[in-house]
Amino acid sequence: MTKLIIILSAIFEFLFYTFLMVLIDGINITNQIVDLLIHFLGLIIVSFIFYNLLQIIFKKINMKAKKYIYYVIISNLILTLIVPVLMIIIIPNELLTSLSFLILISAIYYGIFINLTLIFLNYFFTNMRKKP
Image (cartoon, rainbow, N blue to C red; front, side, top):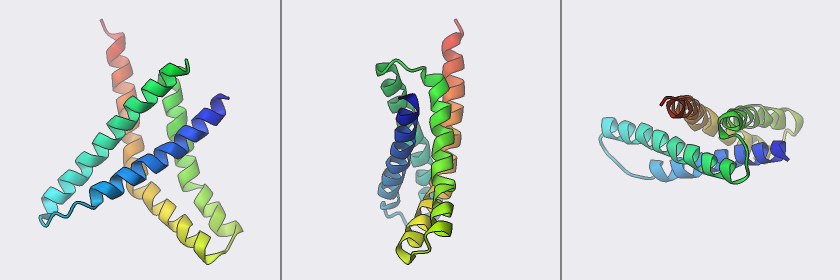
């Protein structure tokens, strides 16, 4: 049951950050520095929202959030970086190849930064709670 929840959380994480970052990219700003600043601020905000969402979900189903957030991050990276490559190799369909490239670009562009931010948030917030 926990493996299913982790896989579903990893898929939800991919959909969550892709959807929100497409919304953030939809904001038209002419200044490149401000646009880049808003983009990275949006990445940090999306990762913070998803971190808190995972904390709430895992607490509701009585799972240790500190441990399983790392599993969600690892499975998200595996799903979004390896599965599209396998789809390109196994099924050489033009539509699936285009979809796989979009998944890879989203995983590289958004996923790695958001997952690294989630790792830092999980590490620092769980260690802050232990200190008196």
